[in-house]
Amino acid sequence: AAAAAAAGGVWMQEGLEREKKAKKGGAAVVERPKAEPKQMSKEEIANEPMWRLLIHNDDVHTWDYVIYAIVSVVKTVTRKKAHRITTTVHTMGSATVTITWKQQAKKYCMELQKWGLTSSIAPESDGDKGPGGGGDGGGGGGA
Image (tube, rainbow, N blue to C red; front, side, top):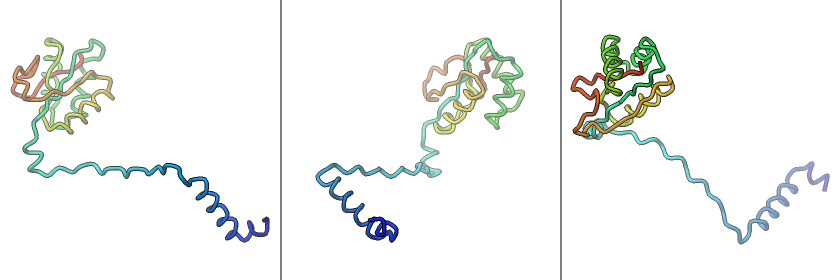
């Protein structure tokens, strides 16, 4: 058997036969292939409902930190707008940072949470607009 093992071919064959016998009558486990992330067309994105990225007051972070976090995560928000957002969230409890499609809103939300800020997303079509949900897309910080 040692000579056969050194040769390689017979040992492998014996191993395969044992494997076949051991698996006979048993259930086979087949891994499901991982799904590719669905790429949406421009038309699908255009028809997708918009979502609000909300930030909530936490009384922990400084104004400068919140402003810096907002402009670092949401590149379309200027420092001036981030200051308005932070002021709104400080007085109202929460505010809208931006309105975008759902996947982007989720990404922004997770990034703000990595910065330690309390954030969430909500459908833009809520109607009530909630605290800080004004029409300019500006809204909160955690000051």
